[in-house]
Image: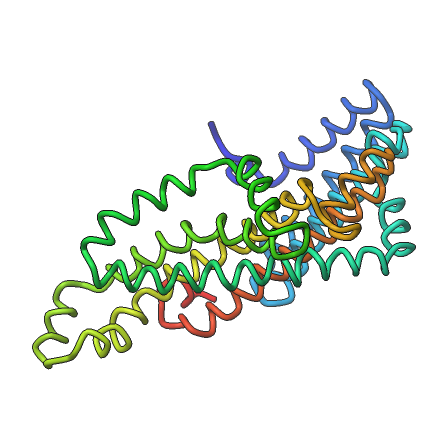
Length: 306
């Protein structure tokens, strides 16, 4: 099957016009939504072909995201969808603006206390454990299978137990995050420490380098892409773990607590506002780790193009 990029230039506008006409015949509201979607698609395609500069790279995803919000708003307004089923983005934005103090308190409790503390403890412990495993074949054969078993445990089963052990404060949420991020980080660190070529390790041995000299000057720099890969994976796991843990017990503050309470009250606009805070926090957290990775691993082939 030929891709859309392989079609003649004149055929894309014709295809768009045909889709809009078909939508208008079926339902004028569907035709309006299709026109909005195809218009934004054409603008984005034009910008993508014009250049690859920093401004264009930033503008294309912004237009794409704004298009999704516009389609969402248009579908809710045109089809008169109940706010209990799906509130409009404008309603969610208004609720967000009216409840900034509440959302900020939830953000501090869930993200700054529970997620970040558990992320730091879990990833740090996994890194130190990876070095211990690298030094000991016994731990490599005995600890990794146990870690795999623990990672396979469902979060909905372990979260209530950890909440009962550590209480309803942020400490229990941090414990859940530690349990979620430890094994993915451990696997990436162990694999990264093995990434150096045998010839490079033999050269360090020829220079009479000690284990720690070889680790700091060869193996750890080589492992950095793997380590940052684990750190980026764990950013989302930390947020998910902290929010899910609050469903099983928390003080009267927190994003998971807020979502659970507002769902019971059918205040779906507040639920979506909390989800928006979580999405923005996760995106910023991931972007920060990716920025640090770009600064420290500029020599790696995956970063040379950027």
